[in-house]
Image (tube, rainbow, N blue to C red; front, side, top):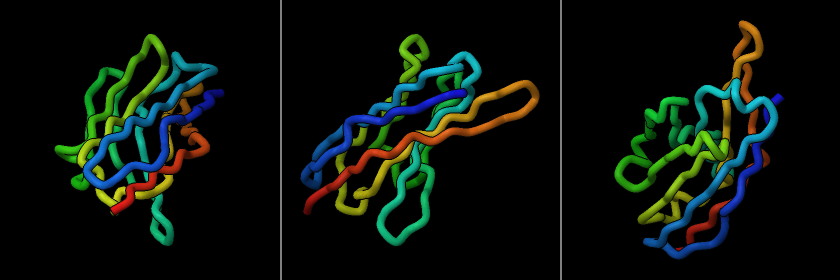
Amino acid sequence: QVQLVESGGGLVQAGGSLRVSCAASGRTNSINTMGWYRQAPGKQRELVAGITSGGTPNYANSAKGRFTISRDNAKNTVYLQMNSLEPEDTAVYYCNAQYTRGFTVLEVWGQGTLVTVSS
């Protein structure tokens, strides 16, 4: 089993920056891809950014150029640095991890952390 705990959300003004973190515990050596998703009120959950175990990132178009995902495998932690935040970035941000158990790929979610960007 893998468990995820997010931290770092909060209130920030438009144009500001915020970093959210996600710490993994449990069978961390089985984790492959990790990522950040977000869900705004009344909208579906969407991918923001993902990163492979080797450190290769991918971003949603809305995040490109503003957000940076990084991963510290020694600390079993993934970060999302968010710059130039806009009110449209307001959402609950969820950490996601995909891990293997035998020949099965499973995924786990964190509890979410709220990011509010004021105009």
